Length: 107
Length: 118
Image (cartoon, rainbow over all chains, first blue to last red):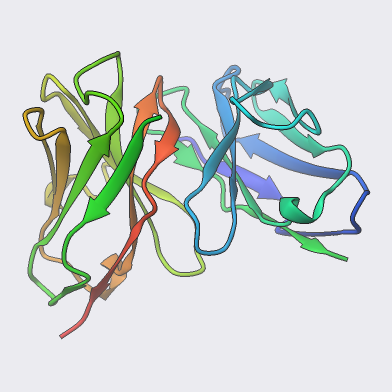
């Protein structure tokens, strides 16, 4: 099983600032990496797939980068609706595994 | 726009079988090269993929749950289902169904809370 590790667990950011979230895989997943956003009481929403491709309707302030074992999700200028928990997920093999999540909270 | 909706009992007794159904609307469950998955999330915790099914009936299960999980599909009803046997309190979670495209989850149901308690 590929283990996904996200850091930090919690990120405190002021509105308008940049947020950088990290995700590390225990072995290479190539570019088969997705990011999801989850707000309280809601299902996760797909943000990024293929490590860097935004899903339909996702604003350009969200960007993803990386390949192999190291990945980054950047939110360029945090809006009020962006405060949420973010999960990375590898789908390099059929047993897709998620990271434990990073909570982005208001500073 | 594809929509998914979970349904089933919200309370299950320990040692019994949890049964949930996901109804897909806005498109045929048989169209396209999609798998259909179940994912769960205990309160305040992360996401755990349970398993998936293709409309041919081919399945993959998380090894940690494989001995207790069965996923089936009913294309005539545009539904797929989850059965999890011998449940314990550790199986208490929000259960989501999701459409799976090349291993990632692009459409999700709203989730349904299942509590295991006597």
